[in-house]
Image 1 (cartoon, rainbow, N blue to C red):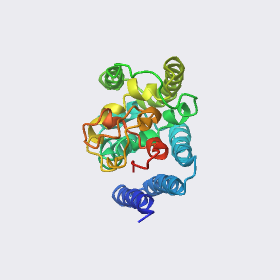
Image 2 (spheres, one colour):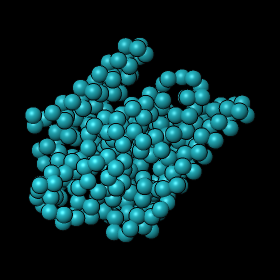
Image 3 (tube, one colour):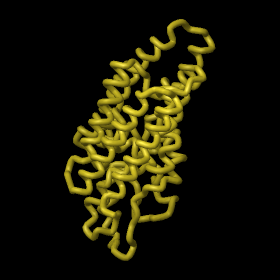
Image 4 (cartoon, rainbow, N blue to C red):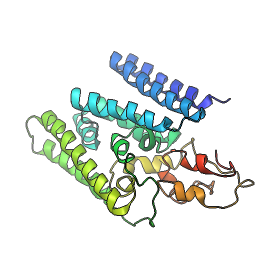
Length: 272
C-alpha cells in the first residue's frame, strides 16, 4: 500500500501517546506524541508525493517544538544531561520518556530516524552548504564517548555534591549546551566541509542510537539486480553509508538517518 509508512508511523506514535496519557494520567503526553506522530506522518506523506522539502518540514516542526516549547518555554532539558538528571532522580518523566521512545527503543523500529527528522541540532546544521561529504571520513568517532562520559560525570557530580537547585542548573545547562553544540557543529561543518561532522564525531546521543539501530526494521534496501554500482548513492549520503550492501554489517550501517537522498538520486531505482 502506497501510504503504509505514514499510517504505520502515525499509529505507533498514537499508541505511545494514549498509553502514556493513561498510565501517567497526564494529557500532555497525548498531545505531545500525537503532535510528533502527525508531523512525521505529514513528512512521509509529502515525501511520497515527491515534495522536495518533506524531511526539512518535519525537522522544523519537531525540532523547533522540542527546542523552543519543551526546552525554553517549559524549561525541560531534553539534552542527554536531562536524561541523566531524571534517571538519577528516579522519575520516569520528560527526558527519560523522550530517550526511551526516540533514542533507546525507537531505533529498533526506525534506526537513526531521530537524527534525520527530529534533532534540533541537525535541523540547523542541515541548512549549511556541505550536504554531502567530499573528503574521507575521519577516525574521530571515539570523541562521542568522551562527550557521553562527560555529560554523565557532570550530572552525577551534582547529585553526589548535593548541589542546591539542580533543576535550575539543568535548564542553564540546556541553553549553554545547545549554544556549544551549534557552535562546534557549525565550525566542524566548515572546517571538514561536512554538515553532519558533528553527528559523526561529537554527538553523545549516538552512543544510545548506534547499537539499537543495528536491528532497525526500517532500512534502505538495494535491489542488486537493478544496481549498476555507479556509486552515486555513496556520494550523496551525508553519513557515508554503503546502502548497496543489504547485510546488517554494511559500512556505517548504524549511521543511516533515513534521509532518502540515496533513494532519490539512484539512477536505476534500485533503492527503496
